Image (cartoon, rainbow, N blue to C red; front, side, top):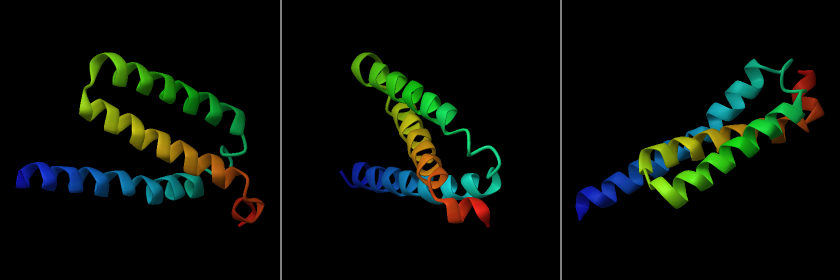
Length: 88
């Protein structure tokens, strides 16, 4: 029981680290973040693959990896709307 709780807490901590990683990638790739259309395409593809894995395969490691990538893509999309962030 304790190992399951510890594993769940560790998974949540790892997923929360996707937010600073998304900010870091958005800061490092400012010139490419303006192509928001392609980020949306990538995000939709990740969501479709996530739904397929949740419904059919139920492999937790792959699902958590896809959620991690979705969070990073969402942060990049949100930062693409921030004109002050893109100018600096």
